[in-house]
Image (cartoon, rainbow, N blue to C red; front, side):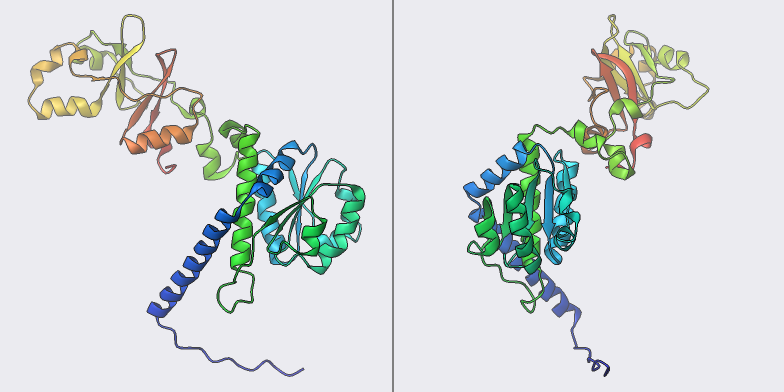
Length: 331
């Protein structure tokens, strides 16, 4: 076997590289925009089939379309729709038994004429499973055999126009749209999403505030006490937060006073205020959060308003506090 000829490097300045990269992104963005306007009732029919599916969504596709199908499978699974990927070549060599009568097939093929897909279609039709086609050609073997066809239309691949690029980008985006709209139709909640993502940075964000909030050594005091009495009476030998939560006679949160607030009094030579009721200098109606709120919501709140401490309330009474040092890095 003769060796492949050596290819010479083409001079390509950084300016030219960036210009071409931006043009590629622009072309793909234009294709997405065009397909978004092309979506019609077929998309809604597909969502209805996915929502009513009593089994699993079996996603299949060959080559690059198959790789996109695997990503769509993962998105469906994580957003409340059970899904599995089935390689079309494996399907005709024994794995067809993985398809249950209650399952729905989502088949990806830009041409709609992929050999492995065309071999699979009559076998699936014989089983009676609904077929949703995601394809570029409305008049194709796949489209004719499908119950619902989401036709992407003619899509020009970027670059040499040969390798699947723009077509797979569009397939992925439409697959995401199918998954997310179906999830919305099913009433899938962020709390359910959190159950499927317990690990990593995302898993931390999806915890509830109750799982992370500090409950030991909370600094809680009556808002009628003086600043001096509050701070002298709340001395703690262990780790503490930098804020005191002030409560009224009923034990409900009425304000917040931080170590920084105390420092500002001294810096501004308002020493006399130290022996006045703390309610005169506390922050009234501070931002708060409930214990069952998702941590990511609390982190976003703290980030947006530059908060170092966030009281956690239950029935308007403080039950914990979030400190910025406990959640830093999650925003």
